[in-house]
Structure formats: C-alpha cells, structure tokens
Length: 431
Image (cartoon, rainbow, N blue to C red):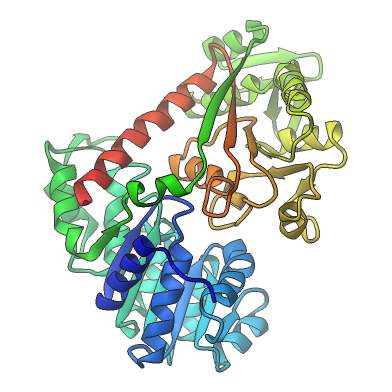
C-alpha cells in the first residue's frame, strides 16, 4: 500500500475529524488518495457503515477502482454504472464503497440509498446548480447521509455564485437553505430583465470566511515543488479575415456550398469561434474555408518530433479533421485508450474537455498538450491540463494554446485568465 505525503495526511485527518467537509485542492494534489485513506479509517472504526461515491462516469470506471487498489487495498469497492440491472447488482452487494456517476442520481433517488450513511462528491462542482434535476434528486435522499465530503479543484472557477449549491449538498447550514437568500445577502441585482447579479463589496471575503471551518485548502506551497514545471505557450496564427468580419458585422456569411446564419449575438459568438478554427456549421453541415490552425498544428507536432501529445478540441468537425489528418490518432472511446496512452504506445490522443476534464490519470503517457480551441469554462480548462500536470508526472509539461489573431479566441483566453484571478483570490481567503 502506498503512503500519503505529510500535507495529504493532514487533509485526510481533516476529513476524518469532520462529518461535513470540503477538500479544495488543485488537480494532481491527490484528492482521491486523501479521501480513500480517510474512508478506509472511517470504515475500519465503524464510523460509517457504507460509502456512496458520486463522480463523472470515466472517473467511476477508470480512477476509483485503480486508486483504491493502491491506497486502500483491503476496502471492497463496486462500480454502479451501465444498465439498471448492473447498477442494482452493485448497490445490493456487500461492497463497502459503491461508486456511481452523477447522471444516475435521479434513478438512484427512486431506487433508494438504504444502508449508506456516507457520501463523497468527487468533482463537487457537478452539483453547483440547485435548480438542476440531479441536485433536486439528491436532496430527496440527502438525510440518509450523516457524513458528506466534497472534493473539487475548481470551487469558484466560474464565479462566486457557484459556491452556494456545492456548500448546500455538503452542509445546509453553511450558506443558508435557499439560493435566493444567498443571492440577496451577497449580490446586487444589476439587470432584472436578464437576471444579472454582481457581488457586493467584500462578499468574496465574507463567504469564504463563513465556510472556512468546513474547508481544507491544500496550499500549493506544500506540493508545488513536487510537480514538474508547467509551461503554457501561445501559438499564434493568422487567417484571411474577410468572411469572419462579415459574420461579425452581418450575422451571415455565404460560401459556394453553404450559407451560415446567426440568429442572435449568442449564436454568432459560437459561429465566430468555429470560424477562428477555419470552418463554420449550418444545420449540422460544415464547410471549411481555412486550414491555418491545422497547418500550424502540423508544424508544432513536427517540431516536437512526434512526442506523445494530447490534443483538446471543441467541435466534432475539428475531431473529424484531426482523424483525417492523423489516422493513427486515438480517442478516449477507443479500446484500452487510457491504458495504451499511459504505456506510451499512443502518439496522439484526441480529447474533448468534457470527457477528459475530470479525474483521469494520463500523466504517465506524455507531457505535451495542445488546445486546438478553448472551452469557455475555466473548470474544464484547468481540469484538462491537470490530466498531465499532476502527481506522478516526471517531466515538464508543455501546454500549447492555439489562437487565431484578432478573433474570439483572444476573448476566450482573456476570460479564462479573469476567472482564474477570482478563483485564486477565493483560495487565499480560505487559508
């Protein structure tokens, strides 16, 4: 059995001592190992009869069983994903820990959680929306769980408003029982028509101080020197801006085989992001008008001498073009993709941030990552980078951000930086 580092032991002790607690730690700090250690001790001392773990699906199947064998080999674990019959079999068995994915929450609430008195929310941000169906489903059975632990590396990644839902499922007393009261206390309504709120002065500090007793923050200084350097490099490219400017100005652009129309400003932003990558969709069909990003990608991969690389994409058409250009590229849906990648036998792994954004251990197969296009979500961006830049990575990690000059790419990249500033301030307030 592996041993925790001192800073991880402190976090495990915090969980053991607090029935309602959150661990806030950046990707790669070992949240799963920390939690497994605390869970094992709680079960051994009969403080908890049975744990339910909620996690993204790939994390359920590819992370928890693997990590449990390393950190808590005597602890029995079952994975409740797949068909209803497979889920029922796992839940009705004798395993001390059952892991299931958030998409099953509504089904689980109907099935029941008899016998469980501990729950772990892996990637707590999945329950940040108290109006969501999954959140409401869990609230129907929440009283069964005396012990509730939440794990996340992106607590405030998209703003302070996200904090309420995450805190409520861990401990309803932390920030009050209703989202409306929380918003009234810490925010000001600035646009009633569109429901836009802005934080009140010092609200970030006030919220963080209120939840501090239930929160353990892993100080980056404790483990930063254990991780290799992360190098983030902007890869700039240019394209003919004629069609892009027309779409931005007129919300419409015409090609010989396709006419793309944007009905409003929100839609046009999506169209402009597509066009920054050299294509545009209309009614499911796509037309290409520029290969600038892919030509630059060819140069980058050639310059890296075909070192194993993860390429993150946003659109299906980008994936299709990647497959056309690199026939040997592998996706996470391919057989044994993660095992083969970590063994070093996959040269190009193609991932979407929503599929690879949480929990997967990909640090053993390479140290290069390229964002062909960026997600708007800071959480998805940071979690995707964290697949490589995490504990166990032995080499410096190189993250390349492909940006088309004078396009919405620059706006997205800037927005991610702004959100990171909010997140970093929040973490400082909790120390």
